[in-house]
Image (cartoon, rainbow, N blue to C red; front, side, top):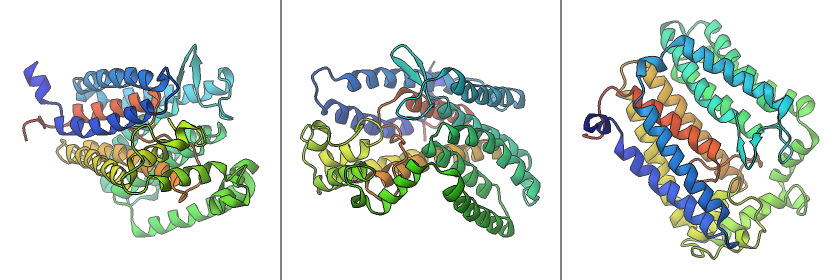
Length: 362
């Protein structure tokens, strides 16, 4: 048991603790008497740590198995397809399976599966990455689930999947010529998407992002309330339990999509800066574990996992402060939700299992 415990990156776990604590304390401060979100999130934290330990002690050779990865990828696609048959829309999106009081979002584990798949693909072909064929094939792996997620619709997760692929392609050593071509393709995709793909309400969100006061009671309401909450926090914050925007329910869904705004109102700029620092430590430890791995597979997986966390963090914060359109993404490790939290801890446990040597004794 002592040898197994030495394999755990305790610095990583300790840097996660303040993030989890910040989320729990903010949920506790919402009020309402029963502390519904606080107690449920506490259960998810316990389950997540159990998943992390389980994955940390798993055999890393199994995680590199091509047949296992293909099987997980196929299962993930099947789950995304099954949503359209069995799941009911929640807040306008067919993204969750519901079993009683529990809900599960299959796109979350799919992000980790794609990070593993792409790491496996590029680690075997890092010398041949100059061949455009490998960029197209890897893009096809991501395109199928990306389209299924877009149809739900879940624009936030679409952006995360795209960011994951782009980060891993860049880390694999793409040529400047191909990078320029991808840039042109991205611009063309945005133009086509705006005129022919986006639904009217999605375009309305972007208009509201550009000027929330064009429709302050409709499309711009969420952005305005989030900006008010962040601004009200000033430097030191209003104090735990004194966030009026969340307590008085002006801020929509403060436990998930607008967790940063709810946190910033109570903790202020100082608390938000600390939050950013601990996120930075988590990403640093992830990349460090990847560097210490046995080969390119571990390094690329670490880059993929960190890109998921970084993209989700900045998209969530960006939409809370009015720099990005509202997309409905939780703040990693802080927002309420079992699917996201358990999946992230699973991803960290896989990374810990792939590490070459014990990190706890550095």
